[in-house]
Image (cartoon, rainbow, N blue to C red; front, top):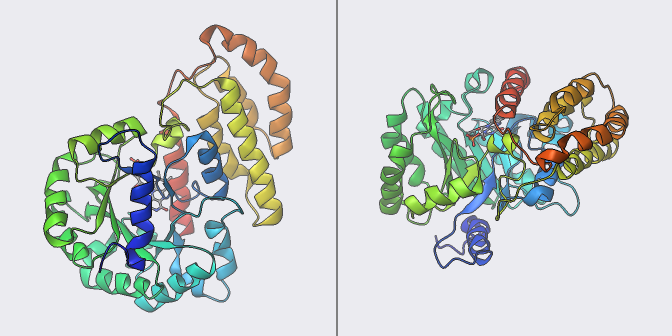
Length: 372
Ligand SMILES: Cc1cc2nc3c(=O)[nH]c(=O)nc-3n(C[C@H](O)[C@H](O)[C@H](O)COP(=O)(O)O)c2cc1C
């Protein structure tokens, strides 16, 4: 298989484009926004794009069984919704039954997707009980069949996984099996399932993984994930390990919506409020025209935009009491003059980028265990 085959074509274009967009003669990795359940829907992806987005977006993970089930298929539509004019994301699906994966993957091209990513890293017990997500690390023969099934779609097939199930060092057995499948891209969250996100990412294994790729599957691209917060951090990591092709950022976006920006710039509160207003407008549009959305779920985003300035927490408190987007808009209109005056002496900049991530993760993971 060459880099020009359909399986690899999508990703080789991503690599080329990332390089073209750079002034540097050095290899520049491509950047992705990580798939995040109940976060990276069409609404938030478009807000991130407005803030200076990555090269690639992933959808939230979608249950392959629901996609092919006559009664459930409408319930998952929202997860795969892509707005007109929006950059087409990579569809991430999860499951463990090859026939279901094949059925789901074949639907994706009809929806305009060019690439499918298979989740082999989710630590959630409900997913594991279905022998999917990180459980596939313990059942590599099934993982191989799942990849082969996804290939039937003709789309570029990638995998996102962790280093191991119980121990990070399992990568020495696990990753060669995946590399032998000649997938287009392997994204590695540099932790084991057991480690969840509680220990620092295992950067110490990057070179060993790259050497493994070079000897088994030199055409498979490698994307690193775990604790990388900004484009600058990703560039530094890729420079230290030149074989790295891509960098995926997840929770960094909760701390800084401008995490992918090529030239990091201090952003004003007005810009941040404009992003929140965009999110409110897109929420209303999707809610009315695409799929019904729960207003309560919108509240967890407030901290991304409203933080690091005087009165931020008081303003958030007020917004937490709201029940509709218009109530949020009314409060913003009413309070903002006062807030802008208070932050003038701070040049309207972000100051504190530490608090939002933990909140977003906790809320969403709680929801994860109920919904998948
Ligand atoms: C709220 C939340 C939801 C997530 N949902 C998914 C998902 O749907 N699919 C997936 O592969 N990983 C999911 N992840 C894992 C992230 O994609 C990523 O691997 C992880 O957060 C580590 O990267 P980071 O340190 O940059 O956040 C989720 C993570 C979070 C915090």
